[in-house]
Image (cartoon, rainbow, N blue to C red):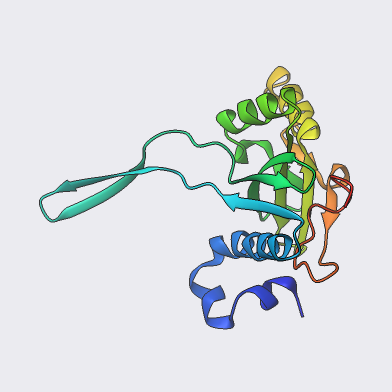
Length: 178
């Protein structure tokens, strides 16, 4: 049985495909918390609700940080974003917002462990991309705009993440001494 099938019931998968990976991460975070390994939470983006007569719209109030932040046992701060892609070669850099790059750069500067979790839909596999790898590819992409083959982070430079020791998605393994 796939990790996705364990996390989400069948009827949930059909209507909310964009949320599956995030739900999987939340389930892993519950496992980390229950085992006393880490406290990691989803960071909500603040939304502004605008009402015009009977019409209601909502817009993000500003740029957020990354999707998740927390602390691992021993006082290690972590932050990461979750991305999904249909691509087979890697994660397109266009899927990462400039403010997220800025956050990763600043987080690494203050010794916070920062990374991206990527779900490669076509392979049904999950990967962790270290923050420094993200920055290296981003900076190269920015310096070489327009060149083919420099607009993604290849799968070969990602670390596959699997279920282990009862954690549905053990993305901290090998990252912070776990």
